[in-house]
Image (cartoon, rainbow, N blue to C red; front, top):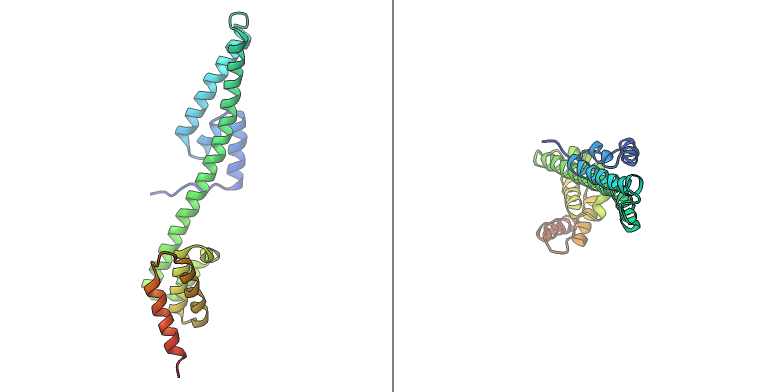
Length: 186
């Protein structure tokens, strides 16, 4: 199974330009085919209505209908640009979440295999998130404990305790505190 598409700056720029020229085309380029086709069809219908009302039948349609056609075409054009931004943001978030899951799965495999150094190396891309992500903080604390880095592990378990508002890892943090207290005793 393929994960979410990684949206880099170049692809995002190309999609934005394409979407400006052909509303919905940028969505298709970033992989949101159904949304792109629907947005493109909506714009096409609205633009054709506006052209017909203003250029083909200006005497047959009252100004209200002409203005409505122009407004619908402009609104669908702007809506296409907004939809592209929303889609790109959603794809970036989905890619980041998939990457987080992949890294945490790798760390878990290394920890189960008893390879603390590999677990710490695998965790490096997410290490900055340990300050606010409970699961990353737990895996970091487990890896540091397994690596025998006592001082850093103590700080990591303290961070887990601060982040664990629901007590999911209370038993593990208390166990680690007891071990550290036992190690400090003469």
